[in-house]
Image (cartoon, rainbow, N blue to C red; front, side, top):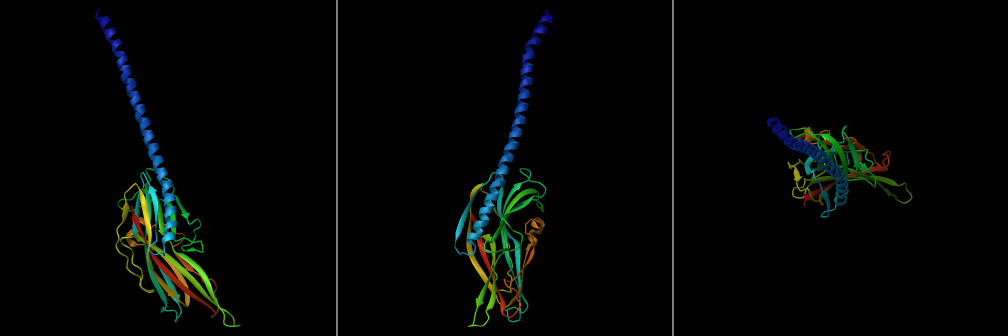
Length: 318
């Protein structure tokens, strides 16, 4: 009788054990599937953020050019991100313009002055999405192989993406998409005639540089052609809302004009306070560039005048 009861009890327990085992297997499968789905969903959102960051940067770079050197004009660009972080990094780069003239050109030898600029950064953690192998791509302007954008279809800003490992205490792998102003140079010439005498040709080069800052704290402009202002100690401006608008507005500008120019050189460098973090970050094709006049300076008939325009563009977020 005892043996019969034991067998009957064991038969009664068997379905319970089987149910527990099946439930455990089901929970494990669901947990694995949920983990896989979460990973895939996170990757999808991060990839979507990356694609949107490129569209946003392209629109912003074009918008900066549209409002630059037009005081009071403002345009807005919308954004919407899930994981990406957006911030304005201030006073990160310095453009130096060195202009050499002859004795009558207004400079004893070389006039040197500087323009400072921040840049907009959209950062996505490399743990969420990665393109690997130090991926770098400049997507605006489409053909950018010189430090200064040139010609009638030139650009005031560059937009690029870079797989970057930043230094510093909070460094890590990121897919960064950035917008940074670049110099724009435009050549033309002025021809004058005196009766039947041979014409004189005045080469004219205009250089445009935008300083990207905030509306509330614009960057100072150089007061004359031979003095470089000291940059302010502006703080990083994060835009913490996942969706919103950035508004860029044309602010004040300064103009420098020099005649009897012999040479012009433009250079760029990362400011010392950011060199450890962004020293190898920017996708400039070169850091130094010399400009040439439209016509060679082969005789006194060919002069060269250079005008440098530095304009501030302020950024605000909503």
